[in-house]
Each structure stands twice: as C-alpha cells, then as structure tokens.
Length: 210
Image (cartoon, rainbow, N blue to C red):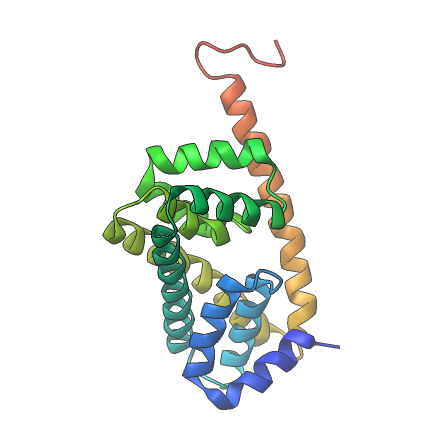
C-alpha cells in the first residue's frame, strides 16, 4: 500500500496547477503530512511526472499564497476574534498553552527570523501566518521571510524524495514518509533538549547539573 504515491499519481494529470493546489491545501488541511506529500512529489519528479525545479516553484507558490490568505484573514477579524481563532487552532494542533504563549511573544520580538525559522518546524509552521496576522507583522517582512522558509522546507523534502527514488527505483512514498517522520521527531526532541540546556546554563542562571 502506498496512499501518498497513489495520491500523486491521481494529481499528475492536472500538472503544475495540481502541485500549486497541493501546496495550498497542505497549509489549510493539517491532517495531511506536508513532508510526506513533498517526498511523494519528489518521487514523481524522478519518474518524470514533472520537472523537479518547476515542482518546487509550484508547490512553494501555492503554500505561500495560502499563508498570505491566512494572514489577511486574521488581520480582518479584530484582536478578540483573532485570539479565539489562534487559541482554538493551537488546541486543535496539540500546542500546550504555555508553549504557545512563549511562541507568540518570540514572534512579536523577532518577526523576520521567527517567520522564516518556524516554516521549518512541523505543526508550528501552520500557525505562524495567523500569529503574524494577529501581531500585524509588516506584510512585506512576512511575505519574504515566510516564502524563503517555505522554499527551504519544500526543496529539502522534494529533493529527498527525488534522490531516494534515484537510488531505489521502487521506493514507497508512504514508507519513506514514515521514516522521515521518525527522524523529524528525533531532531525536534534533540533541538528542544539543546535549547533547554543552553537556557539553563546561560549567564546569570544556574545549571540543572550544578
């Protein structure tokens, strides 16, 4: 069974327009694993369903367009409704309230780096446009930083899918996506541990190992 591979084969006849739609859809339908779809697109590029650079451009354009739409929507809701929307989305995606509050504060203080960096963090990347809209981040800053982060994320996983298919022609997109998910969870856990260690050993703070 390869549901991701079957999905891409179904989308292939639509061509670049289908890839643009997939890029937009993965931002608004969080049940879809974006990295899995991107890996499958890379495998499709290896099978000559579409050129890899054009696939990256189309998916990145669709995802960026969806980000901007979410940003624009939140800016029209007003502060109270925006807060309710954000907190509801955070609960839906399993974000702990205290972590969410710290994240919003970081977005407020470091708009461009956070907009870029969080596009490389699973789950958080889906909420970043809404937070930027709530904080009224300058549209140009948000657009450029988010588009750059999205391009890096998409290129990474489409490239992995392409290279995996070149190395193993019969590679299963769904199986590869599960392996990548395991790796992502491990990397995220290590990053959190490293951050906590750095924070606890920063000047003026006592190390937990003292």
